[in-house]
Image (cartoon, rainbow, N blue to C red; front, top):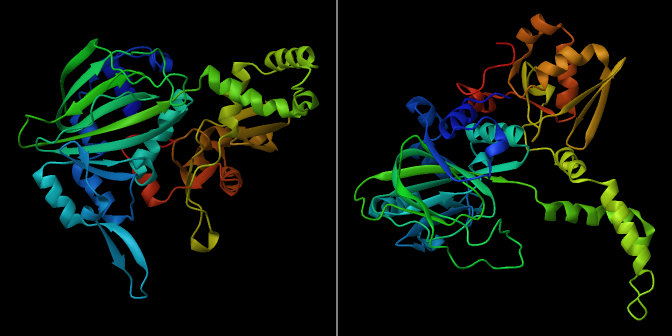
Length: 398
């Protein structure tokens, strides 16, 4: 899937593909104001908050460096039947933002089609899971104190400006679950300066950083942080721990008194490591990932006229002579070989209008699309989902 935002990030950071992800701190700028504003605006973020029932910790507000108690900006909307639904009190939130505050919405990709498609494109690009958080800061509000993330991040400044400080690591490749708490920041400052609209920054895992608008006076800042969690050697060993249960020797109790069987157990562990390599783990991780949320297709609601592949990672198309297998999200679907042209179009990650596709690969594309939608590998292209691609991803038959 070719996405304009990914192309812009690569250009801004001087990357040629995903290999540089996590390798080192780097900054750049997207020289396309229309693309930047297309991703997300402050008003669109506030509109998301207004129209949905959100709860802490997914939606939080900070003022003077401390979290504001949810009771100050949440209210319970009571339905005519007496049902209580928590909603953001936009009047109270507006007052806080007017005074100077930071609001945070985690996993914006769950609520916004543009963010959903952007994260999916980044997942197809990186072959890792991605989520995006949004941060809106007004006036001279402070941000978080120095901290580090247990994943790589790509930060895009979408509106206004914010002052940043990025430091090096005080522990190499620290983890969320680790043998060391990694609580002491390093003194090494990698970069300090102001991120302005269109600026892009990559902060690798473990680098200490902080951002603030202190001293900037009236104004705003909106940035999004794409968090990309890469697999590690520890992830591979944990996966092997699950596979070991297939072998009887690992299911026996350990002999606490005599230690008998230790040699055989060690040899079995060595064999298991040889049988299932890190490459096997990475491939299995992509295929085992559960199917994403999507709008179900019901023919009683209307015909299937456009679809898009919505798997977290690119499906595999395996040709076997007279048949072809589609492998994705723990599923394997077998079709006749004549479906290959339609599959390549439908599984491209791009939106596919079926009437246009039929003129390119034949009328059978509609039948193949129905199968993929039924198996939840593709989803019907609703107007809302379609809006997430508009101007960012061309349709598959363009």
